[in-house]
Image (cartoon, rainbow, N blue to C red; front, side, top):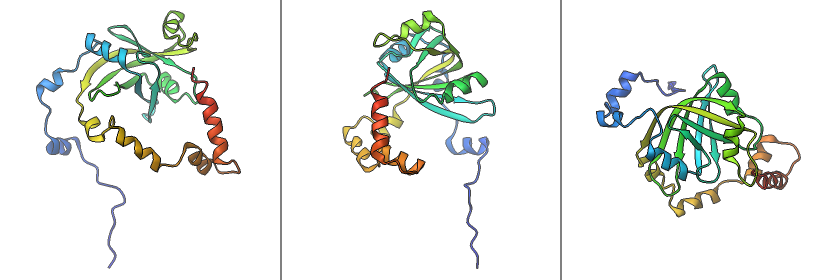
Length: 210
């Protein structure tokens, strides 16, 4: 007898999802605001890391990590943020997506803080000198910045970070179980380049962070 094996998990409708998880408390929905208040401003000023979610015109999504000194994302006013575009791999997935589809989502983290800050809005790239000069680090300003017109901002509870034990130093031992970036690159790209050569290229790029 042949046993049918489902190749994909079944897809649920929104009604089925709500039947399983229920409706949110009205108080939680009310915590969403349409601007950067003083608490969100303080959180962003202390955040050295955020993730930027974008999608292209066809809806294909991407999420990019962004990091720098605490407060690297600038609050221009209660409705505007600016994210520096530091030197990277030049693939520019986020910038290409934003030009096609301005809707973005951001998640800000502060080391040791369980709660996170979520900010959504509409973005566009800029080379405005008055904006770029505010993002100068190591005596160098970025060539571009991403401006976000904020439409929604709210704090997210710390359950995810508590469950992940993200800030527990013992969790860092998990990295020792993974192959190095050079080993991964050598396996994925193939060819005769040794992992050590990839590692040397990466280390050289890390010395040029700014």
